[in-house]
Length: 299
Image (cartoon, rainbow, N blue to C red):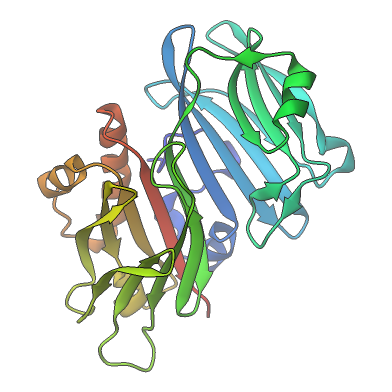
């Protein structure tokens, strides 16, 4: 069973496979963003996965239908000089899909996503379905495309973080929302009573004490006037004998709590599967944006 509805194929990452140290290293270098769009009036999911390894950065773009079946997919390996700038044509619903990219001047930080100096776009019938990056003028000039009447909506993100006590990332809690500094702090070594703290823009938003008793739970915090439901599971950090990640889900809809309550988690082995299932159910009912963070402790 797949985690996000996506078509990663052989490069995909199954949540259930993250128990090994080898998967740990691979998982730390993946970021997946999911966008909802329409092709020929039919709802589709655009999955953009940025990856990083010893060879450099990579990119996979896939299009799923509303049953999570892969319609088409393209793998881009910009560490090959000739692939840092280019285009490919795919087909979905008997319609040609053009994917264009320019990563030749892209600047990267510690993660796999480029920070600036790039564009990636998806075009169908001269309409810009998706446009990522800060080189928007260059993308429009390259494709001669106009914005689609119904563009892509950012509905979910999955990211792998790693650290010892502090895990930090940039986060949006809704489509076109502000970008915030999100920090998760937890020291599970050298203390008999670990504490979990989540900060947004350096402001403490929630604190969980007696974490060994509250290693799973949920809490609502207010960000940009939105109620953001936070679910956490740090069981692997505290009790697992094998390498495993803590899991955090941030969801910008009050219905998330009801969705959670209707499917209580009892078995640690089924936790990630349950979250995956909830994600699909939530998106099928248009219940808002979901941010999944997998936090891996450095050995």
